[in-house]
Image 1 (tube, one colour):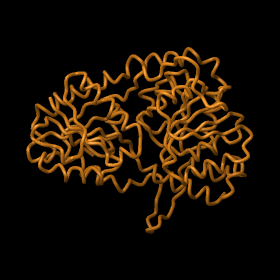
Image 2 (spheres, rainbow, N blue to C red):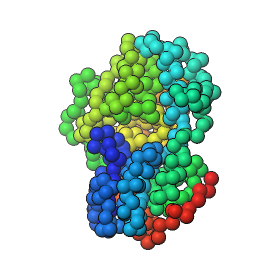
Image 3 (tube, rainbow, N blue to C red):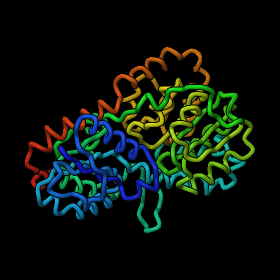
Image 4 (cartoon, rainbow, N blue to C red):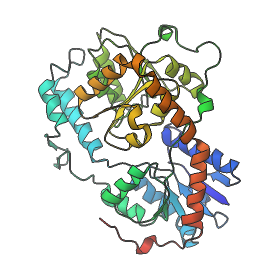
Length: 395
């Protein structure tokens, strides 16, 4: 079998979990005897059995452009698969507007605390605010995302979707419709990347350990600014690691960290060979994203005995079950309470952390992901005539 992987156009410039997933899945499939090439849509020829797209369904405009460039391959009836990496995303846009509103009302980040903005934060947590966008659109927390129609257009031309969880698949059915064959492919980690040998490779200021860590590139979905506000008055050192992709959110985080009693450290992107040492010395890993499916850095941190704080709006619970502390990413008080509970309960919760780490090592491997992908190719793509043009949504 020969497969073409098509990455998102900026994958060589903006690193993320989707890039890791693509690279590791390619390695796993090659180990299973599949010939995997990585290239642009124009690389697809009649010699391929599957074209596999790796741009998230959150960017349907980019996927539609890829599909246009795949016209010859689609005309040749080469099945097209998509790793959706999707969750209902109306709240991302609303929460971005809510945070802008909040920080415009409280422009002095150095002085801003939860208590000083309690009324505004409670309104955000209750989703009771509407915002007027620049084009005059009235935006509520429950308004459909304008990309929803485009997402359906994409799915009409996809033969096989590969969500990362059963919960993600159900969300696609509920919010978008049932357009294509499917195979659930769990995300994974390579435990070998997180084995600690020798002395810790840590910056001098972190060698004492005992801090909370967030490993993620800065963007509106990850909302490092809101996390910094949530934990500002906690006596817990904070460490942020990741490319400052969104300079506005990065600047807000730095302003909120000003004059904080406990220290705040920032480091740009680090490879696993160094990042694993930061996980190993951390007490808690925090990822209060609007959604994750499930958040590779949370899985990685769990392997190195971090208590995991994650959001509760998407599919994280299918992976972490009762092994994590959950928070509402739109509620700064909920985030603070989850971080504080994870920090204070750390010594008592060692058995729960060990059980989570063991389950991740056993169940969420790239070998399993590769096998699930290959099964889906064979069952739903290779042996089926594409029917997406005649599909209609269930919802």
